[in-house]
Length: 136
Image (cartoon, rainbow, N blue to C red; front, side, top):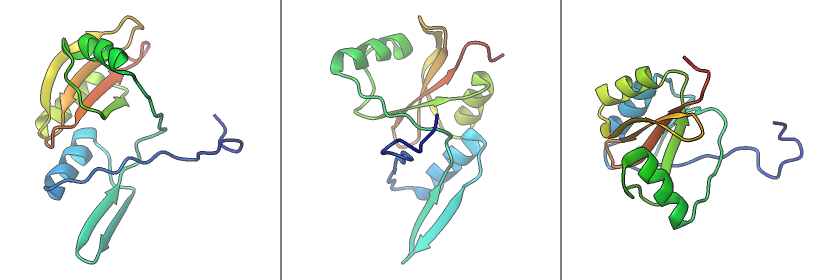
């Protein structure tokens, strides 16, 4: 998709945590990615992870309930939930669990054919990992 005619070039989500090192280890090791940039300003720490292309989904309560019921069996996520498409769901899930994720619900196949698993990061953020049809 070309961004030349788009009024938005990039979506960034900023997560603030009480345990910076733990969350950095969780996302870097758990997703198997290296930081794209690191900042240290006035004693503060920050890094940026390149997460591929971004999409903002806006759900009403009913749609959030439908998705939560499909992925987790009940309405459970908060106002914000990450959904990350991965090439190998099993490997990504195992890496994230090994790095502090909590399994919310076992993988499920959605009505549209994706395989989704619901996890929670060490700070409580709900994460859906999904693998699209056609990926082994």
